[in-house]
Image (cartoon, rainbow, N blue to C red; front, top):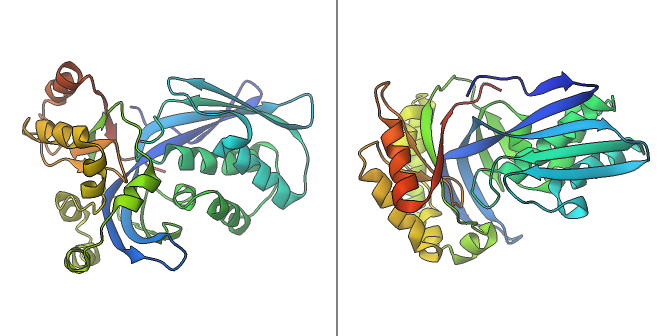
Length: 299
């Protein structure tokens, strides 16, 4: 997919692109007193987007229209609506705005699409309506909407801790190309975390290795570890995803990793002559699984 800007003025409105993310590593440090799990994850945006279009509405209020390949709720149940409402509350404003969300990225896939949509809504409405909220105000609003939302306010690659809301930008450029498998399975993140059994020894070992490699800026070697401590829990709940992973790895394109809590999986394309078409055909023909070839996003 061609590299595009996030914001684009179109026909009197503002088009905002909301990129998906993949987890290049995901460790669970344990359960917190507040019931959430403490995580350490290296996340990267990819050039696979939902789109939000902002335009003025005749009446005061937030009008949200959802279209595209994948269904999502409209109105107050949608993170886009809630993000717009949160920003207007911060600013103490009431305006009329119509937001059309074009959904290209499936929900329940571990690609952060809802969180990315929320971040795009915060930044997009701030720009479209000239609200003037600063980054600190937008970040505070993002934290109330979801653990992954703050990541999408930052650059294309970051190391995230806490519930995911503590963001440390990774400045060194990491170009990559990957086959992203999109099974027709919607995974509930809460169920995966509830089913998770913590292994402190595994965490300690992985953490030491990952931190050492990151300190040497060896992001490629971190990716090769395929360290996602939620995989076992997800595959217990959805064994069909484990079968898909094994079939994909059998194609010889490289190790396959679950993104987030699933269901999407990816494998890095390590050479220019890799036959991604063969891999995609196998996914479609043998599993009825859609796929897309993605690259690292640049913003």
